[in-house]
Length: 377
Ligand code: SF4
Ligand code: SF4
Image 1: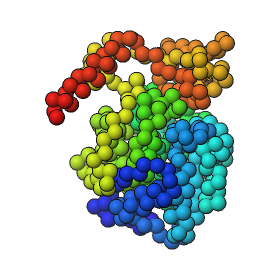
Image 2: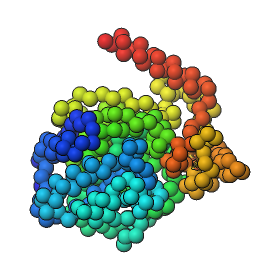
Image 3: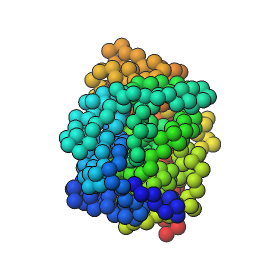
């Protein structure tokens, strides 16, 4: 990729794209690259990091859509790139390549399961210590991060910075939740991880996003009709969070990035897009943050009509908080609210059971914000 002008570093392109028709996606990607002033140099090694969080069909909208990746591969092939698509899913990466319909892209790119790659140890210090990362992240000329536009019960949103968590190979990922037990500590870790990998181009598949209890299939698909891109993952995430209806600084990865909203320029036909995504129930209650701390916390629960007792949630819980006696139950004293169980459940059976007082305050806050908006108009 030829470097954009320094003044373009914090430019974010927001392009409208209503569907996954190849021609429309190709056009959105080309417009994004043109707005950002980037072009690909001939014959380079390029690694694409999509979001393939679990083996789930693209129609569920929780993974990067294969058409975005295919069109990006075609553009890269035109400049003679050697392409790799790399991922370590939350579970079953090889099966995720099949079910997420990535396997056919091996006609353009080598598919890389990060779990089976040579790794190097990177020191993160503190209570994290050494983190293994696949060598290929550092051996290629260019890393392109292609995230999905989703809400996330722990971090508020999962966009470009959070997508890099999938570069950590295998089950070691979920273990970090035992020491990174707050959204703040987890977000600081994500910033450190980003600063090690430093993807040079960051794209969000926001054509169909996920709202509510994301990032897994407990969330709801939402037609958001956007492709968002930039050189800086921080800038792209700040703009995408705003479009999703969050205050950018309420997302800790945005806050800790050190980048100010005022320093970001937005271009493209979707520059004024506003799509208030339904927030996860774990999000703070607007107007009532002070009172909310005196109300019992929400707890993990399981829908008996969806659960098939497959045991995956228990397997993925980093703190052994889930036990099975013909049906899963969560020991809330052990639960660190990392939401790995919600992410893992292939049937959307894990949910956050909110205390009725929280539900009531949330409803009032929503009503108030509606009144305030009406007055503003
Ligand atoms: S992962 Fe989902 S379906 Fe499987 S046991 Fe847990 S709640 Fe039930
Ligand atoms: S029960 Fe779920 S939210 Fe609680 S610690 Fe285990 S995986 Fe995390």
